[in-house]
Image 1 (cartoon, rainbow, N blue to C red):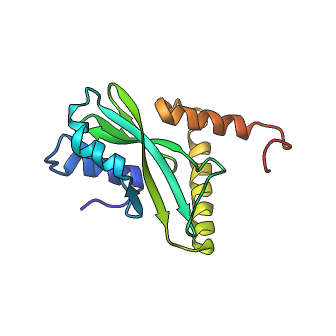
Image 2: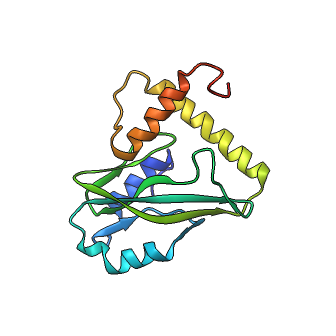
Length: 170
């Protein structure tokens, strides 16, 4: 049992204390579904990869439709990694898996199929924005672990945050 502090602490506790029987670990949420080609890749090809991590695409469905705009169409996330070679960044929001060694990207999908309504979705994203703001203020002067996919996402967010008002929403 581990006292809940935040997601990354809990995730890393699991990595450190669970006796994994396989060499590869996949991070997946309860509302996510793997595409058939991703399943085939995991079953047939993953064990032969000479890398320590694999990023894949994440697509999001909401209210029965796939989100195609607003950065949700095709998000690259590192989700497969070798046991003992990865950690989740210590952040309150937008934490990414950081892998020691080489990673590759495969153009396969995991789909987030959210079955909740608009009120739940709005509340969820409000809590995300609060946690991301807390992270921003806590780590403003600290060098982050911005590498790989996380670097691209955070570079865009930093550009957006300092853009003139006519470029951004607020």
